[in-house]
Every structure is written in structure tokens, then in C-alpha cells.
Length: 241
Image (tube, rainbow, N blue to C red):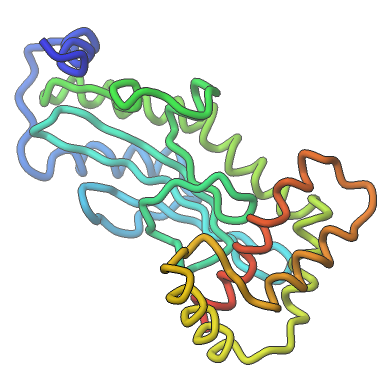
């Protein structure tokens, strides 16, 4: 028996309740989410994920916060992630991100606090029956309250108080450059570099990064985050022109 199958068998609890029918997971999930997270509105269902979202304001910009809960009846598991995005382009993106302004984490990773976990430990397993699935949803909600909201609120606080983010946003807003032109130039440069989308080889990028590196009183660890922060700031200009 494969490791994943053994893990699923271990985590699955049998019960005598009826099997879930199509649409029943949503009927169980939505009322519980509305009761426990009234600020997060149900937004949409996409690729097996139910997305709940809310917005807040920081530095005259909108922060898009989301809870995404995935469910599969056939494979008998749920999965959950939380995100806080300053760049609206990435709202709804499935890619995880450990950056400062668009972070997106798996809930189990936050719960275990290890940074990375084996795939078989990322899921909340169910047995396709109503009783166990309801229990699993309650477990996810409990973890969201303890770890998910703590992450989202900490991120919001970091956006408001981190001096590098504050300075970066101020300098970013002061950039006097045509966004369409910037996007075209960066895309052209990326093609020359072999479409390395993680690298912006552009004078605007280097200028913004240099302004942040000049800041005093920044720890060595935080200085290491400047290139990624600069990249994500330029992404706002490039992807939302």
C-alpha cells in the first residue's frame, strides 16, 4: 500500500451517516463559514475550491484577503489555504507565495509551522459521508481561527508598520513612468533573458531596489527580502496597467 493510501486510511473515520450527494458539501460549508467568518463573503467556486474574501485598506490601497477551501469527493480530502494580496492581479491565483505583499500559504503549513510539509500531510481527509465531512469542516474552521486569521491579521499589521514596505510603497507610487511602456520593455527583456519571469532587468526596478537598500536601521535578514519586495512592487505596475 502506498504511503499516501496508508495515511488516508489512518486519518479516515468511518460512520453510518448517508453518503454525500452532489452539492451537499457546499450546503454544509457555506452556513458554517458565514457563522464563523461573517467578514469573509463567499465569492466563487473554481477548480474545486470555494473562495471566501474580504477587503481592507492600507496606505490608500486595497488588501484582498481570502480563504480558499478545496474539496474532492472522489479522492476524499479537503485542503485549505489563506492569502493576503496587495496586487489584485493575483487574487484567485493558486500559486503559493512567501513574499511580503502577496503571501499565500497552505493552512496546514501554518498549523505545523515548518515552512514545508509532505503532500500527504497537507490534506484534511474525509470518508465521503456527511458526519465525518461535517467534522472535518469544523476542524478546518478551528484551524482557520487559530492559525489562518492570525496569519492574515499579522500580515495586515506588517503592511501597516514594516518600514521597508512603507518606504517601498511611497517610492513605488512616486514612479513617473508610463505603465504600458514599462510592461512592454520588461516583457521584451524577459524574452531576451529566456522568459525569466522572476527577474525584472529594468532601470526602474534597480532604482527602486537601490532606494530601499539605502535605508538605515534595517536588519540583515530583512535586507535579504528587498529584491523580492521590489519585484512584487513592480509587478503591481506591470500587471495592472
